[in-house]
Amino acid sequence: MSKKKKSTVQKEYHKPLITRRKPNRSIAGDIVLYLFLILVAFIMAFPIIYAVSNALKPLDELFRFPPRIFAQHPTLDNFSDLFVTMGKSWVTFSRYLFNTVFITVVGTAGHLIIASMGAFVLAKYEFPGNKTFFKIITVSMMFTGYVTMIPNYIILNNLGWIDTYWAIIIPAFASPMGLFLMKQFMEGLPTSLIEAAKIDGANEWRVFIRIVMPNVKPAWMTLIIFSVQALWNNRASTYIYSEERKTLVYALQQIQSGGIARTGQGAAVLVVVMIVPILIFVFSESQILETMASSGLKD
Image (cartoon, rainbow, N blue to C red; front, side, top):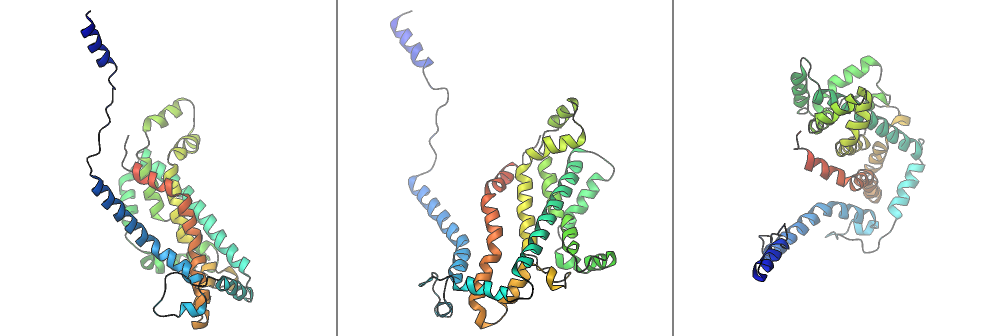
C-alpha cells in the first residue's frame, strides 16, 4: 500500500463517528429568548415577592400610596403580632396546626394508595366496563367542588361524619384527579416488565409495590403535591363546626378578616398559608417535570 493511500485510510479511520451539529440559532435570537424567559419568570415570581415584602412592612408602609414593592424598614412585627393573637385564642395554635397536618397527611396518604391501586387495575387489566368506568372518572373531573357540595353533605350527614375529620379526609380519597394522573402514567409502563416479575414468582402485591410504584415515582410525587395543596388550604368550614377541630387556614383567615388594625397580620397570614405548598413544590419540581416529559411515552 502506498503512503498516500495509507494516510487517506488513517484519516478516514480517525474521523469522529458523531459530528456535532451547530445550533440553527443566532446569538441575537438567544439573547431575545433569554430576556423573554427572564421576563416571564419575573411575572410569575412577582406575587410571591410582593406578598413576602408586604409581610415585612410596618403598618405605615402598608398604607402608603403609591405602594412600594420592597419594604423600606423590614420588620418581623407582623409575624410576632400574629402569634400573639393566635395565643390569645381559647383554642391553641398547636391544636389548629395538628388538625391541618392530620387531615393533610391522612388524606394525602389515602388518596395516593387508593388512586395508585385503582390506576394499576385500570391500566394493566381488562375487565367488563373498564373503559366505561374510566370515562366516568374523566367526566367527573369536569365538576367542581361547588357542584358536588350538596350531595357530599347529604351523604356525609347520613354517615354521621359531619363535624369530624373524616368529612374532609374521605372525600379526598375519592378525588378523580389522582386516579386519572396515575392511570395515564402507568399505561406507559412496559407490560413485559410486569410479566417478567410474575414469571420470577412475584405475586400481584409484590409487583405493585416493588415494580410499579418505583417506576411511576414522578407521577405519585406530583399527586402528593396536588393533594397537599388542596388539603392544606381547605378551610373545612362547611363540614366542621367545632372550633377545636377547625383547620389552621380557617383560624388564620378569621384573623385576616379582623379589619384595618390587623392589616399587617393579614399580610403575615398570607405568607404562612402559602409557604408549605411552595416548599413542597420547590423540593419536588424535578419530579413534576419528569412526569410532564414522560406522560406521552408508551410501551
